[in-house]
Image 1 (cartoon, rainbow over the protein chains, first blue to last red):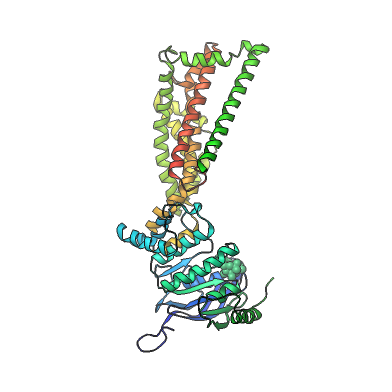
Image 2 (image 1 turned 135 degrees about the vertical axis):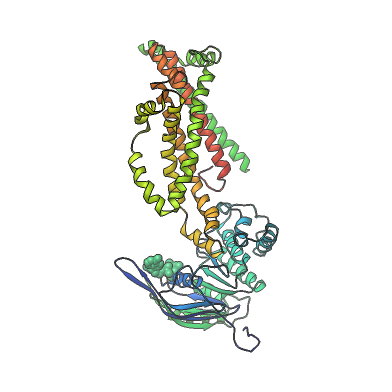
Length: 258
Length: 263
Ligand SMILES: Nc1ncnc2c1ncn2[C@@H]1O[C@H](COP(=O)(O)OP(=O)(O)OP(=O)(O)O)[C@@H](O)[C@H]1O
Ligand SMILES: [Mg+2]
């Protein structure tokens, strides 16, 4: 647990009474209801909830891609209202720029912020190496496998050196084997380059494997149902007794959906 | 391994194209030999021989390559100017609501009018020389390219725009790095359609009023009851059209290595 020099816990993300309702001309759909959440610096938090409960919306509001109907989100003490490079986002659909190579995708953030070519290339190369894509710098996204595309997405988000990273089911589209591998990889990367991570999943095993803390969300309109501190040492084992116990316990309180 | 498959694919493609062409020529030959059509339809050998002979023997005042050049020059000027204007205007319309609101209604009225309908007016306004042809080619190209550039500028995926914004890009940077690349495949499809339309327009306007060009060759052939000349004109139009379209695809493949459309 990270303390600042006064010995208090350093809060990186704070959501207070966040509400989000989507309005159309005829209808209003409440998706988030009174959500409170605190994330500590360098903590790996997993938001776990049933399908369509509003997980993506929660992440979008925290990232500034959507604005909350009421309530506030602060990141690093600053209130969030628009997207910005102090936060990184890894998408379920990868959302890579198809006309750019791996290198150009990864260096996009520093380039947008006006960093010199030499400097940003160096930085991008560091993160490309970190995610294990050396040798693929000049490939286009459509020449890569799903797992490799997600690695590019992770490197691209990291390359801006944001203080927090949001990941929206980044492994949701991968086959089971690749998914296990990427779960190991994301922990390896995170342990090397510690950041505050908010990771969304609807896969209980993934949640327990990755998280310092699992936050279980209710059905739509969503809010926090319960939190679990995962005290297992890393690297974790999916078949460990305590792992299975936690898994069963969390599974039992999750709202059921069709 | 990859190269081998590619090579085979090309062999298959070119092989089948050659076979299809040969079959077509044989059918053509058969029709001229075994039916009464022979009187109105010179055979393929005769047509191709005449095509090459006309590289030295003039039609009217000029040899065939000079006629080709007359038509091509009209296309190149009208087409280039129209494409440039239409791409810029289309992107502006796709980006700014107000430009869209002003230009779109006009465009919607002009678009359904087939460009050939403008030929008589063009001659009245710009004379029977090249100016009227530039105008007509401009019009045909413009309509097709504008529509596609407009659609392209609006095609930017909002998720990608959000991702760019999240990475710290401002509006200008997003326009250059997201909106424009998204529009490129659309623009090329417009340029391709525009080229077909422009080529058709040039031939049509030459057939109505001109003193040189491939359209002129055909219409003069008709006046003189020279079927062979008409066929050579048609063959020339086909060959040039094919080359123009193929070179456009080549440029697109170079510029859009990342799309499958460009392959
Ligand atoms: N832009 C929008 N306009 C209207 N309704 C929306 C919008 N975005 C989301 N919703 C509603 O919010 C609900 C939750 O959406 P959201 O994508 O946040 O859920 P999710 O938990 O991420 O779903 P999934 O498990 O499929 O990823 C959806 O059922 C949808 O009806
Ligand atoms: Mg989602």
